Structure formats: structure tokens, C-alpha cells
Image 1 (spheres, helix red, strand yellow):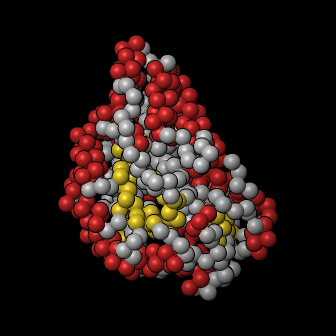
Image 2 (cartoon, helix red, strand yellow):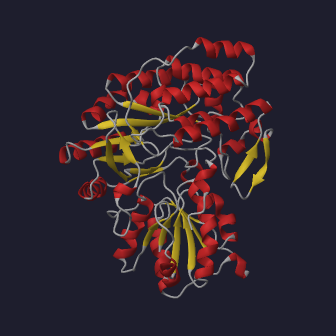
Image 3 (cartoon, rainbow, N blue to C red):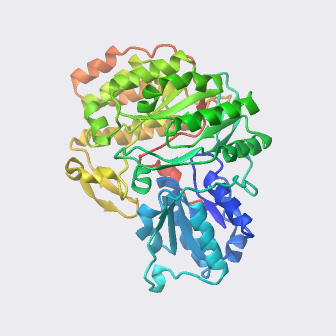
Length: 477
């Protein structure tokens, strides 16, 4: 039984891909996504192996709530945790009942585990007094199989692409590469992949897209941590994709550094149907960018904005708005810069209140300037707690998170979300209540948000390197 608890609103590639490997070995596989369905207790009771896919922090915290239920329903089953967040949280996952931890390129090790379990080799859990096996982190180059999506919910039950005219496109999801060749200090990919990335073969990517198009997909999200880690591979994939499905659109995630370095490839994206590029800008402040080791500057961000705009591709910038180094001046400058660059419509409201997440293994822990703000590791939250040296900034972050969460839930009679300009204005008003008069004057001087056409965007907010909204942590069982 393969279980996903949450994967940013898309059908989980990390369940469909290993399902193909296991079924190729003759295993009977049940797939479950607890983001849209309830736990099937009968299937749990009949499973020999129950494996939880943990691609992100929120998914891990949700899985921790479910694993004890699985152990209660089927004490004999082997419980495995696999995916990006499994190795860094291995000790805690073992304490709640996981016997095996797998990270990196997980398909082959998971298939090997299934073969061992089928042969009667059932590893004991920590609560049985056994010495836990070390986590398996594989960075082997695999020959991938086409993901097997049989048994997963319909694509129409997942997040869609919202177009500027109000229509929505059913959205599929695939990956052309995994891992990342960069070492950004706050990134959760780095502790596992350590600067390496792995390619999913072109034919596998195209076959996976084809089966999702056949299932109704009108748009595809490429979930690679950075689509231009292998630019030649990326270009080959999107050219072949456009030739096979000329009406299909897609979106990708690309670093600012790569948008500048490979600006000559942006026209190729535009020509082949790319509507949206997500980029983890994180901050405009040069010191914070240096602490994060982002390898881009404020000026680079402006260059990337201009390049994408010139080719008609929408930008979806994401930010870590609150860090221990984010002063009131820096936050107000962040808002003013978005206003100046006419990016208010491009920024998901949740981005205004996102707070830095520091999990186990983060490269931020290497820096002395991080430790002075830490308040210890919270095993329940699976992260290090930190406080801002200015208590007003923590209070501002908490209030803005409430404001943006409320905004996300407000819909008009046609089901449309509250206009982003209205949320931005509310964020500025709240911020003004927490800062000194010179900064209030700068906020007042911004004036109304300039008129801007809506941009395409996914209906599920995108979070990275951030503490999750508590509403996301409601038990899926």
C-alpha cells in the first residue's frame, strides 16, 4: 500500500512512479492519496508493506498522525517512509512506527524492500526494541519506468490552472529531473542530494504526459526543483511535448540564476506552451540572499522579470518573507518593490506571511548567525523554533498569516478568489500598524496598486522552506 498525505494539490508522482516498479515485480499495489480520500482500513489490514511518500514538511507531519493508526490496524505490516523528508526525520519517524527509511531515488530501494518483505524478511521497529537500520539514501542513476497511475483519484479532483479569463484547465503533474545541482542553504533538497540531480528519461516523461492527457489533462506542471538543471534535457522534452500535443500548456520551476544565465532559452519555453514560471526568489535583501546562498542578486531578479514579461510568460515568485534577519525596513521594502515592479497580481497572498522553516539537516545550521536565534528543536513540529530579535516582527508575521489565510478562503458569487490587490492593500495596512512612522510614510506613498491584468496561476498555493498553515495539518484519517 502506497500512501501520499499531501503533495501540493497534484496527483502524486511519488506514488505513481514506485507503483510501476512494484507492479512490474508482480506485487499487488493499492494507491491512496489522503489529500482527497479517506484511509481505507480494509486495505491497511491486508497489506504486508505500507509505504508513506514524504516529499515535503507538511506531508511528513500529516503522515506522523497516520502511522500509529496503520500500526494499530495492522501490527504485522512493515511501515516505510520514503521521499525527500524521510531521511532527515528518520529518528522521529522510527519512534512512531516506521521500520524502514528511504530517501533520494527511492523506486529501486523500495522495490527491493518489497521483495524482502515478500520473502519473509520483516524488519523490526524501534518500539520492539530492535536496533533500527540506517536510512537508505540512493543517488543511483535509474532507468525509470512510466508511472502507473491506476487507482489514483481523477485529475479533476486536484488543483487546476486558473486562467485570466476565469476558466480552469485540468492539470497533470510529472517530473523530468530530480534533485538539484545547487546548494541553497535553506533548501530541503540539499541535505539529501548534496548538489546532485538525476534525469528522468525523455521517453518516460513523454509517456507519462500522454497518459495524463488521455485522462483529461489540459496543462502539465513540471515538478523539478529546477527545470534548467539540465537545460538541454529540458529543451528536448518541451520541444517533443509541443510537437506531440501542440495545444497543451505547462509550467516549470526555474532559479533566478538560471533565468538570467539561460535567457536564450526563454523563447523556446514561450514557443512550446509555457504559461508560468515559478521561481524561489525568497528575498530582495542582498544579505538574506547571501545567507541563503541563492547565487542571485536583486538586479538579477529584475532582469528575470523583464525577460519573462518580454516573452509573455507569467512569473510566480515565491518568498520567505519572514526570517530572523528580516527587519521592518526590509519587509516594507519587499512590499514596495512588488508594488514598483507591478508584481502584486503575480504573488500568491500566502507569500506575505511565510516564515522560514529550519528542519533537521538544513545548511542554515552551519551558520553562527542562525544559532543565536534558535530556541531548540521541536520534535512535534519537526523543525527548529526561532524568534525574531524584534518582537514586533513575530507579531506582524502572525497577524499577516491570519489575514492572508482569511483572504484565501474568501470567494465571490462566481467562485473567484478575492482580488490580490485588495489583499496587498490589507497587508500594507496591517504592516503600517507594526512599524515606525517613517516606514508608514513609505507605505502610504505607494498609493493604489497599478492596474494589472490577472495572470495564470495554480489554484493550490505553493509553499517551500516555510512553516505550514495549521489548517493544512488537520488529520487526514
